[in-house]
Image 1 (tube, rainbow, N blue to C red):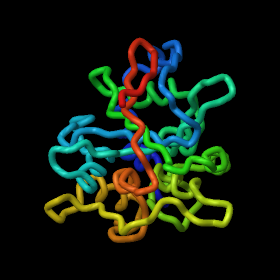
Image 2: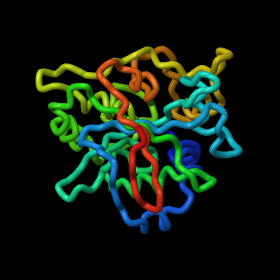
Image 3: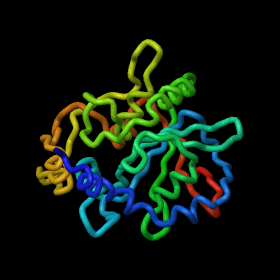
Length: 241
């Protein structure tokens, strides 16, 4: 039987490393001057050489597998929603929460870096945003499901970009975002230790070249345009174009 306690230890590296002070950030007054719209996508990026911890974690493994030297590599993607009170909500799939909908301040608390700063937060929008509310409502139907540690389309759980792809589907069943052969290898052709340990504990082969998604490839889809980069100053959220 799989020891899920051990699996949670390895998979918890990403968010335990990112979390600095949830209580402090959750108390920040939420103010917005940003132009964010319902259905926008939030891509979270880190420099390729940034290390969240002294050990090898999922963030490093994702960066090694999908990043190119000298660039910002996207390690996470989330769905944004504005409510009738003009508050910003985040719907995403993370190890910490599973598929969850929470206020933007909770996202900020979870993704605070070890030095108190935030990762790069780029906002992208569909060129045709007509059905954005429909896509967000699709995403809400996944809330409560677990995080897909297997990176597989053969289960009901979701990883971050998988959730986005499965939510941004037209009423006729057309996916807005494509799937690609997944790559878990570093530039030197080897698997980072994290993937070896994780899939070893899961008792599954690393799904190299299986069809799937990742935030970096999704950010390059032709249906998206970049709105800007989020900055946070004393609790005020704004976008630099």
